[in-house]
Length: 270
Image 1 (tube, rainbow, N blue to C red):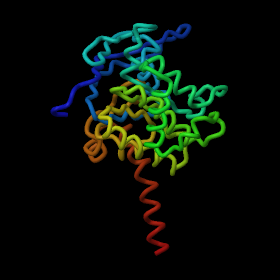
Image 2: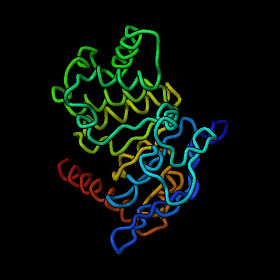
Image 3: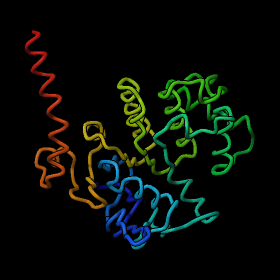
């Protein structure tokens, strides 16, 4: 992407686990970059290496080999206090919207805790003002933040989880299967929200999903993972129109066939 800052550089990052007498390559050497305002999709089924990649990027586990640079700084394997800048510049939104919050705390308290750790300001009133402002941006009444997670729907919790991440003003948002637990309407609202907030805040989004159809409507570029390795990568429209690897072709086929079947049914009805 021209005239944009490269935020994240991943070079030959890999993770190998030793399990008893077996060796598992959870993620084979993978390289890519993520630029400002870019939406990059990481596509693959369960066990493809998607979750391992996110854990490596956020510092939850250390790589077996390779390097991760954030804003030009090597963050490979950073932990503890030295990882604070990672979380300030790169926030994650998790798959389970309700489970990503402490069930014993009201949602506002969880948001406040994240803000106090990563972007201290002068007063609680200033925190509350920013929280309410962002909640209204995403179509959530501020009073809902004063409830517990189980009192809200999955879609409402996920939008509040996105607010919690965005309030830190990160450069990058990591989204881990964030729509998989939502119904179709809630999925659409979350995707629209990500597109709008991404443009407004000029952040980059790494969108991890097993759903090719969802990613194809959201991400301009895509990486396809299969059995821990990258089988294909490139511009989304080009990749879908001219897939090379058999696994990518299989994904596209499973995406197109239901649409074709639906169109045929509608034609018969008409």
